[in-house]
Length: 404
Image 1 (cartoon, rainbow, N blue to C red):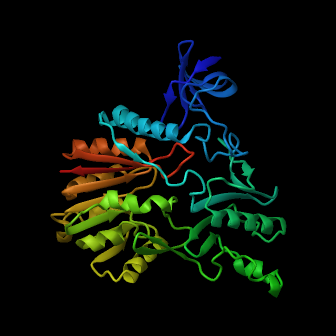
Image 2 (image 1 turned 90 degrees about the vertical axis):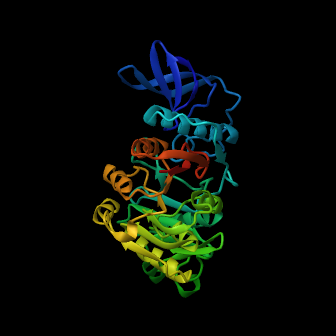
Image 3 (image 1 turned 45 degrees about the vertical axis):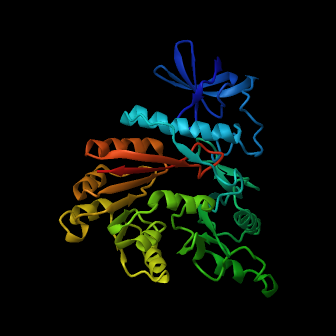
């Protein structure tokens, strides 16, 4: 089947039409003329793969990564960076229109300072039997063995190389299925931890050979703007730290007032600067480790006007509907996982009636779904700003402000 790619859809697939069917093509660029192989059909929709590039789009470039097309990580390397940014703006606009019937004027997307070597957090899949360490192959659970990853910060690339060396020496725990790593300001940490086992099998002269790893601690620190955050390798933290000062500034801005709540607060990325600006702040987080780190980060910042509550977000909202400290709420910020906020969370927010809401989202489709409910509940959309936190992929971060 021969097709011409019209645009990039949410999810990163290229859209084309041929023989009365809608065709979705992986790893395409807008304007490509392609010969494609049909992988599967679902009604009038065809999912296809590129067999031959008949005429390359002017926006197409040669992907620099040797694993591109096999590794399931980056799916935008075939497009130049400006085309990636334009595609992400269209993805956001498409989701808001199609799901929430929201028509938005042009909005800004803030480019990443580094198109490559930006990831400070990674999860590497591990196959002990095959001695493979890397990422899952596209649309499979097979491990794509990766020697060098073009989007990792240098500290994590070095950590990957060290883990691979230890893998070939049979020093990694065979029961592990993956390793999560995070690069702090003074080294990287890995979970699950296995330093004691690895050290016991090395001689004294080799003990300190792993210079990039923060081996003496289960946590690292990161300074973002003027704030210092402590976290573990399993903690959720934004992967592109270069953009975080701007993300925080857009999300919080010049918010002032008596009270604020942050839902899904993690280790307190937004909670700490919120506590600098408002008189009383509550952060809500379900994960036990993240909760403890958030409390430490507030204490280390010398802030005693904020508290962290460990709870399922939906349950916490239900329990605190009538709580006086949640009344006349000035500002509510939520930064949920990719699945978005549960319906009961949105209902709980509407019952609290905050004056202003900031929604930080990493998935335009679930963002659109939740905005539709918030707008139906009486809120209006004030602003949208996108951040390219994930260059070389179809993922994009969006910050939306609403007022009631």
